[in-house]
Structures are given as C-alpha cells and as structure tokens.
Amino acid sequence: MRRYATVEDLGAFLGPAAVVPEDAEQLLDQASEVVDELLLSARYAVDAAGMPTDPDVAEALARATCAQAVYIDDSGDRTGAGSQWSSASLGGASYVRATGGPGPMGHAPRAVRILRTAGLCRGVRVRG
Image 1 (cartoon, rainbow, N blue to C red):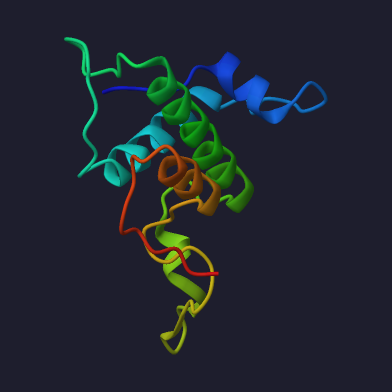
Image 2: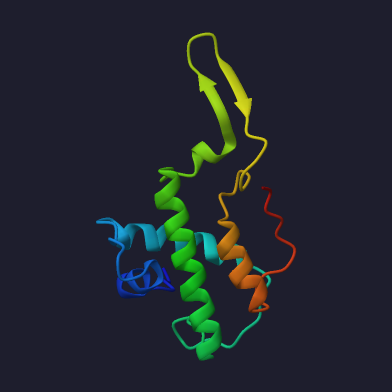
C-alpha cells in the first residue's frame, strides 16, 4: 500500500504548536486509502512503486493525505461508519441518515480542495 505522507509531513501540516496523534501512521494509512479513491481518474507520472514523480503532485498528495488524516482524527470515526448516520439507536431500531457533512464516503473537504486545485480530482461532490 502507498502512503502519500509521513509522520513528519503530518507534523509540519499541523504546525509547530500541535501534537501529532500517537496513531499517526495508522491515520496516514487510512487517509492514503481515501486519497487513492479520490485519485481514481487522475493521470500523473509515477515511479515503479506507483508514487508520483512530479514534486508538485507529490506535495499535493502529501497535503491532501494530511488533511484527510486530520479529518479522520477530528471526527473520531476511525472506520468511516459514523459518517453515514446523524443518530442511531439499537433498542427500537431508530436510524436517521446524516444530511450534512462530507457524506458517506468521509472525504475531507480540505483534502478534496487540495486535489482539485492541483488538477488531480474532478467530479467529487462534498456536502456541507
């Protein structure tokens, strides 16, 4: 699996006063999976490992991955299941679908914006 950002990248993205989460590597793995999904129709040159060869593309992917990792960490929803529902109950089975926010895919709006600006992501709609 490709990881587009390092723990050091995440620290720089968060800024000098921020604390990098203890599970940063796991967050970056999850975030890279989401970024991969957003890149399904993107075209850019890659090396043998599938990593971008253009430094500007590599930077955009790293920043988008960091934005997605922060989003996952802030939401507290490590599995992505929570983004589908605004409320749920087990007794009496009451579910309410979420109407705002990123939608069921859990795309961080900032990550999408970074990829769009770099010309790597088209057609993804983020609610909110």
